[in-house]
Length: 62
Image (cartoon, rainbow, N blue to C red; front, side):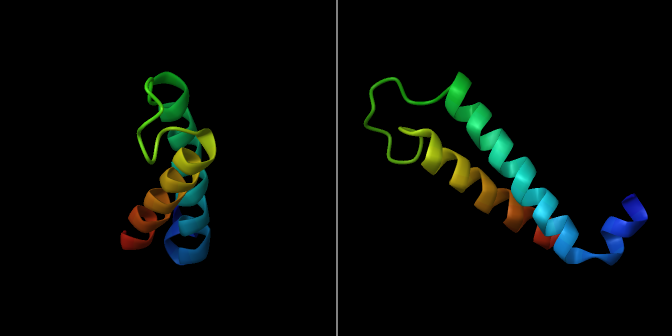
């Protein structure tokens, strides 16, 4: 599996997006924003999308 990830950058980026989205949602669920004034963490959709973006960018770099 790891050898296949090294050959396929698209699969690596997709996996990074999925892992980032899951971690973004977990961040929202357990840390989040109590006051509701935080621009990124005030709702689960923006936090999940931001996590997916960061995960994809990090995965594309390696």
